[in-house]
Image: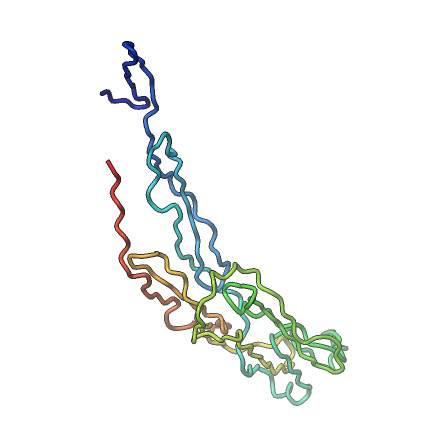
Length: 282
């Protein structure tokens, strides 16, 4: 018997003569180094996933050698930044001088602050001409209604405008789909989420001209609803499932307070022990 690195020498006595031949040694497979992480599955508004992979190519198994052991795909969580949001509901009280209140006609806008107010009687002062009829400017787009999308419950965002001076022609609401990743399978409804979609709140701004632009008050931040629980990061042996929320309903503005409390919640999952690997046959 001989040892070898790449070949096995086989001696066979055949009809009184030695028949020598060379056979390849088995080559066991080995995993390559991990590749780079993929981009986060979410661009904004919650906790996404990123993935990296490796292959059984360093070397690949050959001539009856064993296949590689160990995971070839690895996932980890990634925190996406908060999505741009719009202000929450309620009345914004704006500053204006008493003389302004007496001599000008207030305008009411909904959805967003829009352009500065203009005194209806001040066209000769070069402040611009008021539109006599039509809609107010469009509000900002709302955050997406979900952190992922599917055919049954697509993620959407919307914006509104107000018929400031009738008559108005056209729609006061626009909706469009969000460009988000596909949801990872259907799960049980989360009682912390609204099953019919996000609550749309309408902001009313009382805008009184006072010789300049309107100035808004401090606006404290508010938490969004919790996202669905993520898939468990391990199939067995004790993993983690995470859900997240963002300070975007509304986001703090003009020096308002940031949200207080936890941004992420973690719970254990798949706590059953993993099966022990079968030792290789010698």
